[in-house]
Length: 219
Image (cartoon, rainbow, N blue to C red):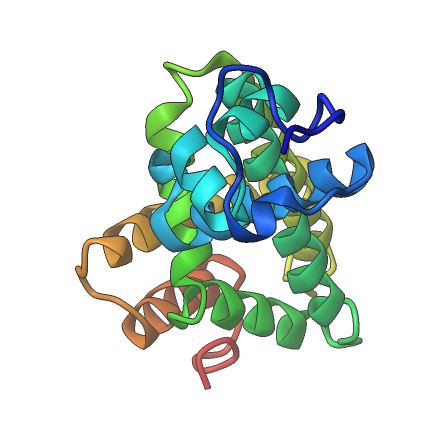
């Protein structure tokens, strides 16, 4: 039996099996496809994000994914943005609960490097490697990296360093911290020095940089 809904099946394409025939409002279907893309990215990285993979995860025909997301480059960029923003909100949500800025920095370092975010680390690693070939993704990677940098500057400026940190020094330390985190997490994706050892590596480094007592960030 044919369908009169052009959003659910296009002429000349295969009929949708099982739940593929379920009719959804356009906004609901779009959200379903976005959720499927996110699930694929977290499991297989951004490099695994294809129309076919998203369609299989959503349980719909590939032609339907193409209808709602005609540009895979745009879908990849949007999927990365969604994952990166959610991570930023989650991590700094925990950090913001700490009145002690040294404790807050310790929690941030542990959250990003203790090995509990392997799926997100894979997304970021793929994003860096794919950004040059995918301009829309490149823009999102730059925007989200800057957002992390700005949050780190604000956090570092709260540390009671002696002498107090200047804005320029905080900017440098934030860039250094972010670069180390990204590099170490990229290494952990391939199994090199994963997990807790990286927490201690960065903690000891920044205890020295900030003039903190030994163990202040690593204890």
